[in-house]
Length: 437
Ligand code: DOR
Image (cartoon, rainbow, N blue to C red; front, top):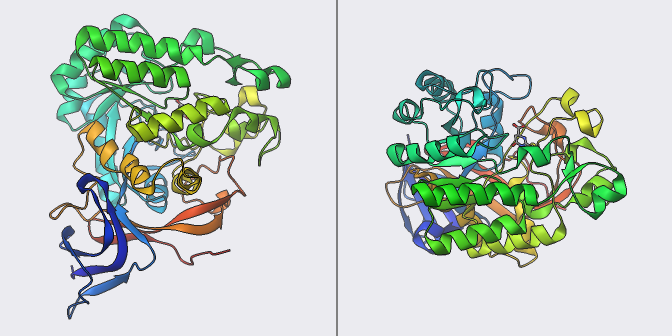
């Protein structure tokens, strides 16, 4: 592989506190070093990054690749292609597949398929309970040995306090976090959106923010009891963020993630206040889109580091899963390909500096799961992105690499785009035409 020089970009590598115009030199799949612009040496491949940001490839701790079992919604091939288009060079696949990822050989299967494809890097999350049925713990130690990076019954909360207690005890053994979908199942049953003035106006059954607060409080108490490693998935409420903040102050071993849609979309999307018509199933997601006050609290918590990182919860679904009434629709948003553009609204409105946003997409998630990723330090794998923070474009879900076209952002104007994604020193995605204006 020839030596490549990425010339003249603003290099933002938050892991090392770098934010300056530099050349990045890549050889043999690794970052060799960075230098002030010196001009390319003979034989080097040159990538012109002037006017662009060069950053580590994004790391997504939470996405649904649907394989095995739901290949009509997504495959590892289409999901990882979507990841690359969105700037994600490492994604962690949730285990709510068919069958669920319960054993070391299930883990190895997903790893093998991903490795053979050679697109984005895929890390595997195993189940906490067999079949995610909330009856019996899965073989977490075996799965950890096979390389599983975390455990989750995502889609639902670990069903009982006793199982969650034991799962957290296992996390001490495996060193791997338990990722919990914090939603009180009883309170959430039969609901389709957030409970509040908007659900009252629409006459739709809503789940109160308290369903998340209750679930997070249980898990934090059990993390305190056991000393185990808890990671709270897709935090969506102000109350949950507050509980996490206090728990961290107390020294409880907890980390947390927030999705782009919970940061930036509100429950009045379901009322037709934005780009989608009222009652549009593309706005149905679990946990649901919340109030503007919740969004604001989440943005603050992300900026302050109370919430450690951003994760997409990319949840692709087939057309038939969404083209139906709200109550029958599958929850979830296809998020990998719009994440960066949507998140840039936080930067363009001055809520979060660009370097902080990049940290929350790179070194911070890598730290949370202990992954060797998210930095451009010399010797690191050359997984990186070129970003145009100002590029304007219109979301066209029909052109997604993902099979899941289910996004409320279809047709939305976004400002900020991934121009190029490199994995292991090889260009794995490149924008055909950079659309301006
Ligand atoms: O909206 C969601 N969709 N939330 C989840 O927790 C699961 C996910 C899915 O698997 O579709």
